Length: 362
Image (tube, rainbow, N blue to C red; front, side, top):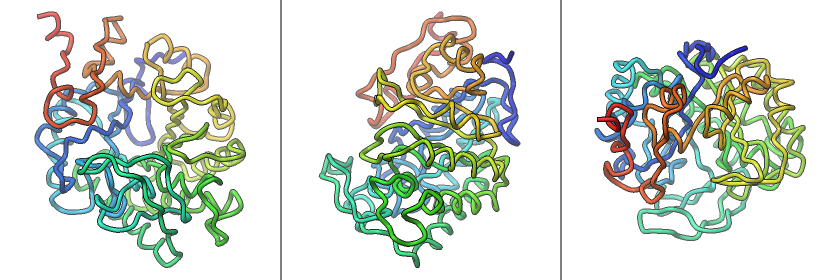
């Protein structure tokens, strides 16, 4: 029976353990979405993860509406990511870039144009902007003529990720962002080949994945889905057939691994009464399956691996506060608690100042 601390092949990436670092938006890049020197130390500190999945990283200006989040669409961003990946590799780690298009979850003051989505919809509530919180705006539907350009953006970002030294990429198809807005029926009201049936609503996911694979290879491509319950206002009336279909097509494409973010009814950062779909997805997805959400102890993570439901576990806020998380979990050491007010703040506080064991014991 596999241990949380056993090696695993995540497609073409050989991981020394099954404690993955989940993508964590931290807002420490520049206003032009260029990584900063502070990010070098942040990722270097966490290189003992079986695999680091980077913070969500924009594929284009259109798709990146989070203030101070990094991108991967121009040369300056590629050059600034390179010392980050070099530092992780020098420390013995592995890191993939999570590719992000936020769709309607943005504000025009950040991206410089009206948000786009599958359909003309808006998210309830307010968006983060450089000028504070502002009400979300109604998105315009992407036209059929625009989708080839979107696929080109994913291809460019993938090429840039590899040029920057990343070991692969993860397609962010979860959490209510653009691909998720195409997948789920409360956000997608299209009557063309990208709307209506499950096959049509999963078409963009398939096309993006195929394009990314054409550059990175299937074994260095992964996908994140969030199949159960509402995510930033995006939901589906019948999620099991939708997401099992999506998982099966990803399995057939041979991706390196599939990550599922599945909150439960007692979730600490999002909760839902919609049952987790990982048991059904496990039956149709033949590759490595990674689960995420509130697995904050070694015992909980080991239990889900022992059950056969998952092959590895991605840790989010726990990794944020514990740069040496795999070692702490292995020896049962106490865990630092993350400082929520600094999650998206600027500067080193709550970012690179969490103590490692040797520091804490000094």
